[in-house]
Length: 122
Image (cartoon, rainbow, N blue to C red; front, side, top):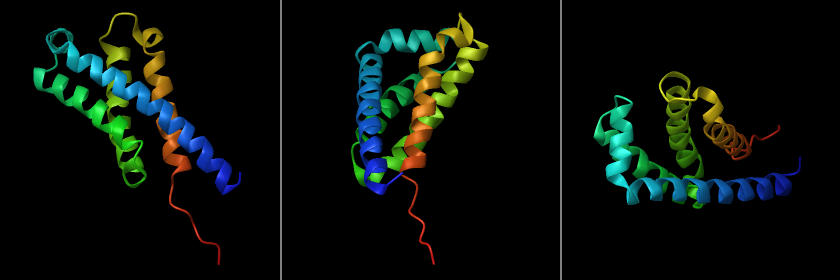
């Protein structure tokens, strides 16, 4: 795959992921009492609800800033690993309802792979 093709694919994925995470985090922030309640029902502290919501919004924005893409993707990856684990262990419906989280997780891995540092061939 050429560098320009890789770059185009990466930007498309980054844009779509940014929209998804900004929207998801924004919804959580707009309904913070509901978000805190949901996290509480799963046995998680309220502060984690704030951290996830803010992390999704900030991470989504970070996906659009070239200097921060890998850091943002890595941070969002941690959130999505947590989401997949919660779907597998505590959220009713299990991994069937966790498919969107698994897709986002996979796409973040693709972005990290596409944005890996270039290697020089000697």
